[in-house]
Length: 259
DNA sequence: ATGGCTACAGCATGTAGA
Image (cartoon, rainbow, N blue to C red; front, side, top):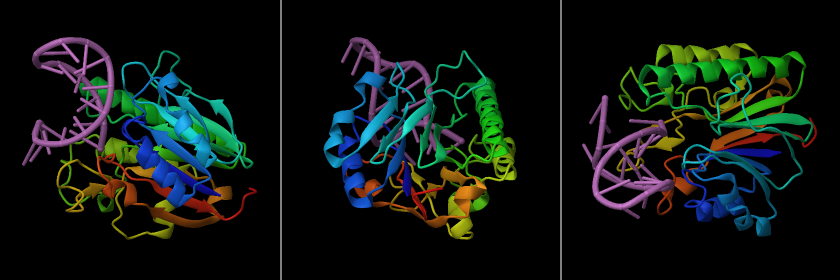
């Protein structure tokens, strides 16, 4: 089973890039972030001829938004992260597929909105931790894929790419990410590439050519899935195309279709 | 450290992204 995560920075603008990615990478399931459209505006019809069905969780105002595309059967179990009923932001979708629960997330950036914006990010990470703990406590094969907006360590950003006060690298942010790992979730890319500088995001402008990037898109795997981890890689082809997203896809291969 | 990009709402710039 091949899983992918791709922050497309507008589903409508990036539909051609996404089509090319589906055709070349052949993922079974793809988790998308930053749709930047309403649910009914998601270009689902652009992918049906390639064999993919989809479920979009959009948002009014052209912000956020997550979706799942699949060429294998899946059922949507959640379209909001539990814990704050008033939180209307479209940042979470969870599906059941191939005997596992798979979550696609768009974790808050935390740099806007001042102290409250950062507090929201940390609360969101704690809500995610509580949900992940439930899944692990019940021994449900579980994975979280998406844009975490966290550089877990200094290896995960180009030197001096961000100031130490940035919400992506602040100590509380990194501690909250480690708290997820301490539950027993495995950072799939680091499990197989412990010391490589690999990035999934490059700012618009000269950053991609200079490889001045960040690793902020991740896949965290429960033990049942981590034990079957076959390959993990970053596909930089979509970032090299014209008018790309600022992110590029992360791919994970789990060795069996049955888990 | 941003906004020098980019996308979006909506029609002039403001907000957000990271």
